[in-house]
Image (cartoon, rainbow over all chains, first blue to last red):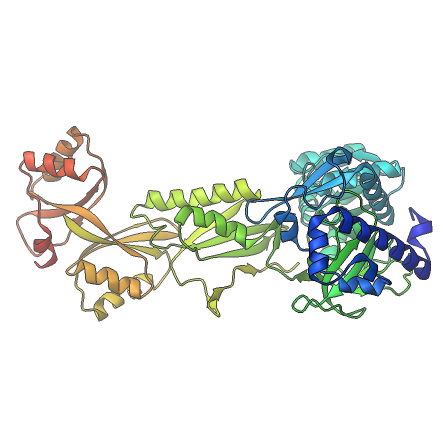
Length: 431
Length: 142
């Protein structure tokens, strides 16, 4: 365990710590962020009303659109010269969301990732292969600083060139792999393709996140790579990876409650649900400086359990994410909203497009097919014209989302409408 | 100029049947057709007796259809008949986007439908070379 003092903290003490930190955070955002002051006031709440942890429910939610409406720095509580890092997540309508970190935030993040990696088997002896993308995405650098904090040997290889990755792992004697679960499967297949066996590598464990995956997929990864596979969870709006992580019990992800307060709500009513009930995860950050988040709706569906864990950690466990309360899909680690595809089609055709996204898993890789109904505005009397339309949509999607999609033109009314609204996403993956 | 109906079709069974059935129900007579296709989709091009009615009927039935203007020319029924016409268009720098022959009742000459980029130039060139252009009314109601 990386930090016994906090990870094994008595729950009563933990709640006192949470309350103190929550009070400070709420005072801070109320004083410094006009958006929060306004939203608290319109909910008829002010910092003085928060007299217990349960009073948190009196405050309004924060949603992704709030970040977008206050783009880029409107929700920051510190001066930009205190911000030492920016990360960004994909946007739905061309406006991305940006998140910022002070030096202390980066230290907190490294601490959380050190806990995550330690729970996943890392020590200062480990050789950690980081195949998450580096850059604006929080995956690569998030894991990186946590692994360095532990004193492990970091191989910052980022994504792509899988054969080279396998060769590097073999040559360097890598012991821990960090990447998306689907990429882990792809690496396993590549190892087999290269006529290697898992025993030719020294891999012992892997921490996998950034997309939802199932117990069944864990079994496959563990069997094919001959490792222990751990789920890790996070999102850039909260801090990035490191929000929660599995221990060796592999029975839920411990959410670092000394830094975050989790709630589970009914996504349609916003009501807080009792412990154990399944609903949408809402997180309040209580130690962040640059960009605190009050009751941020993650849109991820899970449930919480604060009963003692075999590993000794006292922090609540959340079950693996089972779905989303919005229509976001994650393809090869990239967040995709149907509305992004819609805005691309709008630019092509000028009228409301009818389309459908079909996601499938072929082998270990996710594929995205985009069905587009050919309206009169999109139609051309030339094969060439239609082929170039398909091609333009393909290129635009790739440029904007960073995902390669198979674009298929279909006849109108081919995509089923339900209650006047089309079902935008068909997810055929059995994760 | 001839009003041709261009229709988007997915490349799967039953699509052509549906289009022809819709036209049959509206008592529209198909006079000529051609299909261009890829592995996924195709474009059905139709010459019918009532082009406007055909387009509105198809749209009402949820089929993407537009009117495209094409030129119909008479081609002498002898070797080199088509080659001569294409050569004079080529000499005038007129590109043909596509063409197909029109199935007509027994006659001395064949009829070819062609779609060009520069319509006015094409008509002028054909006229100058005394190549007979067939009028719409004649095609729709042979």
